[in-house]
Every structure is written in structure tokens, then in C-alpha cells.
Length: 165
Image (cartoon, rainbow, N blue to C red; front, top):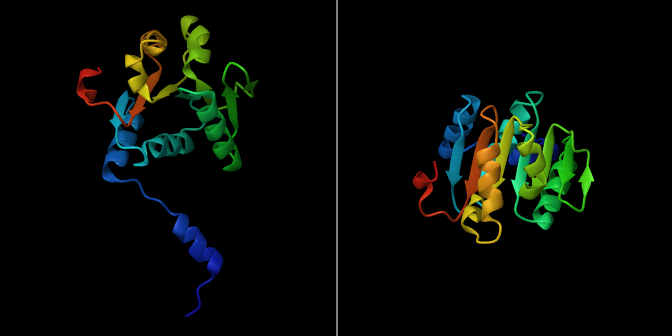
């Protein structure tokens, strides 16, 4: 039996969601807001990536991160993966009407104030709600999101996720 190295490589990249990822994804499919708390590297972002692949064309998906460096990293990663993606970080704005936008949360404030929420707003590192400097920006963004905007809150360091509802 011979194995084609390209086939093996493709199989090696096959990644199926864990049960908790599947559960979160199903809740998002059902139109629910979702809070995910899992350790760094466990695959929180993978939930969003699966959702984004399934639901292209259902409205803009905005993935927010706390720093410009993280936004640039995600932008480059998803651009290399062939996604039609935009970026908004305050100092950089490109393709901002793309189906997926990676951004710092502060850049979305004006949009949310206008009531122009995306189909999905992802708040990565939502533990920043407790930050004395930036927490109010996180809190206001979540509070200002229109009812039609689904929320996906991600963190690896919140001890009391059930209190954040």
C-alpha cells in the first residue's frame, strides 16, 4: 500500500471540534449568546473559525481583541488562510466592510452607538471588563450591542463566568 504524502498532509490537518466546542457552536447556530472560558491554547478561537466558515453571508462577523498586535496577528493568519477579512485598530483600517473584521473593541464603539451592530460580536479576552482603564469600553460595547447582534465572549482567565450574564 502506498500513501500519497499530500493526502496524508491533508488528513493531518483535519481537526474535529471537541464536545465543548461543538456545544458552543451549536448554541451559536441556535442564535444564542455564548460565553466560553477555557485555558489558553484550548481552542476558543476555533469555535469562531468554524462559525465563520459556516455562516458567510449572514452579516458581518467582528472579532475583537485587546491589542493592535493581536489584531494584526489574526488578520495576517486569516488572510493567509484565504479569508476575505478586514482590520480596524485605530491606526489601521482596511477592508472594513469585509464579511469578517478583526478589530480592537474601541474601534467599534461609534458603530455600536449608531445601533449598527454586526451579526456577531466576538469579545476575545472579555476579562478586560475588570480592567480599571479599559473595562468601561468593554462594558459599554456589550451593553450597546443591538439585540440582533449575537455575542461570543472568550476568556482563559475568568473564575466566575456564570456571574457574567
